[in-house]
Length: 189
Image (cartoon, rainbow, N blue to C red):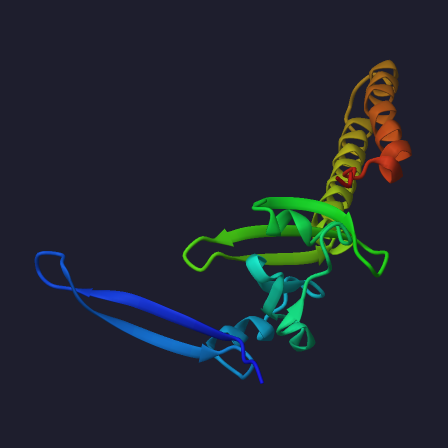
């Protein structure tokens, strides 16, 4: 019966910096351990974390407890697995096996030769941007209406009111007309 373990060692040095001993610790990765704190966290509402050992294409642990000690797909099978195992560090968008578009970020852990991957559906990742765009549109419409009302009820000649109405309403109409198509574009790599 084989068991996955994590062996950690550190040198003990004297005042001159010479190694006089070592301290070591062994963790059985197949049982509950200090790494399992990752499984208690989610990235956003539905995202996940994965701690991966690329040398063995092994998922050490992750937000989904069933992924613990699972293996990554064979090279070339999955667009999200290969870049991290080949040393890539950064973010990318890809289509997951579920068919959902996902934003994935990878950060290497050089001391252990592992990497941490965080994934989240792109719809969830960019939802705050869409909400901000909608609030901006509402604020622009409200402020434009306020300007129109203030100028309309101010004591000024009728021609000025018509000119102000034209100047304010045209950009507002264009903003309103294009609002549904004015979202952040997402391109997968």
